[in-house]
Length: 414
Image (tube, rainbow, N blue to C red; front, side):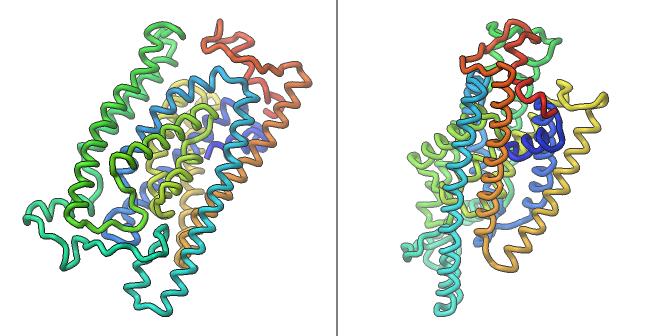
């Protein structure tokens, strides 16, 4: 994610920080397009349903969006040294937690391999990655002879909804939320709109996505809780790693993802660096987590890429050429990475490789951000630019020293 690409583009490719952020977003955007195209046809490893958990994506992504609104404001006022230190600590902690998750998944896979040599195939396959190794209570599924029968139409509708892609109505509502965020951010940045920072219109545009998102979120949660309760009462078969949408669990999931969005916005990194480990912490299977996280990130990176494109933040006189080039680079890299990862998982039957790869990428990001932070701090000390005071939310002018301070801190590397 951005924690990996931004330092590389600054330290290796020598792009200016503002350009590196935009190019990083374009690279991730290209990768997420390929991820979505490759994941859409895939099915869940244990049940006949899409690999992507659309219910989780459509609830958790707006939750992260609400946290991001506050996080971005904190990012603008906190000193750069503070955000850099917090970012390194968060990445280090996330690396350790994700590594432990990978080790636990690896042990469960080894347990399944050992028991599969002694148990019948059906019994061995019942122990899925992410599920506890102790026997689970026997709950009749919709395909078992002991499952309660639904009226024909309702039964078919429930199963078909679980097997199919998301409803177009739900997707349209989420796109409305996405469009609101995109439009409000564009109006705040556009000189033609004439929105002055700190004005009533500015705060109205800043906070408008919050109530819009909350209304959508409450409706989506209500619908999900009702359907989940119906499935539970009818003995629906839940796979290992499925999120349980009870009221208490849903509140916890939403809170976790809002904090993830807050951290991502405050520390200036992509949500995937935090959202992926959070979904693993919730108990989601690695394959489902990877597919769901990339779907969520697509909404974030698409809006950010469009905003960067409209505001002319890409380098070069044309702008569009850099954008398209780095989208292509991200798409090609993701295609190769997806193919390699699928080959490894199929060859060794180890889905935990996904978790270890995620931990390695976050750990590498931590090292790069630490290096970039040390070099930036050294430059600030040499040039007397070190400032630990809170920064004004609205600088006096666009070209004031306060406004430019963050963009020139690592100027010597560009």
